[in-house]
Image (cartoon, rainbow, N blue to C red; front, top):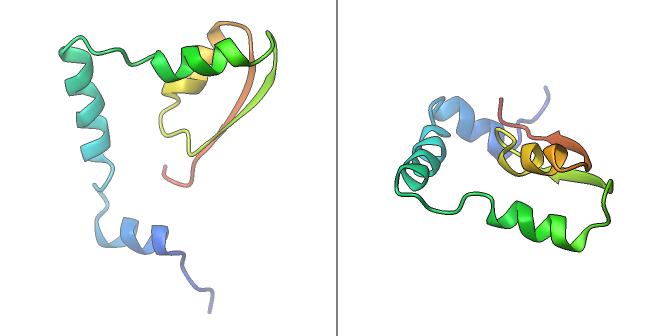
Length: 80
């Protein structure tokens, strides 16, 4: 039998576990908060066109911005 990671155990126990994350950022966006600040920081320190791994990318908030400004981004996340 293959052991499940702690993350997959949490997903199995609460399939809607990521909803809080989604709602948090929707709320921040409605409040006019800066959602691209982290991505702009990475953009400022990375050479234009850099290859960037966005590990734990979720829906791609950071990677999407970085790709749009010319970086080569790969995003990976265990959460579907």
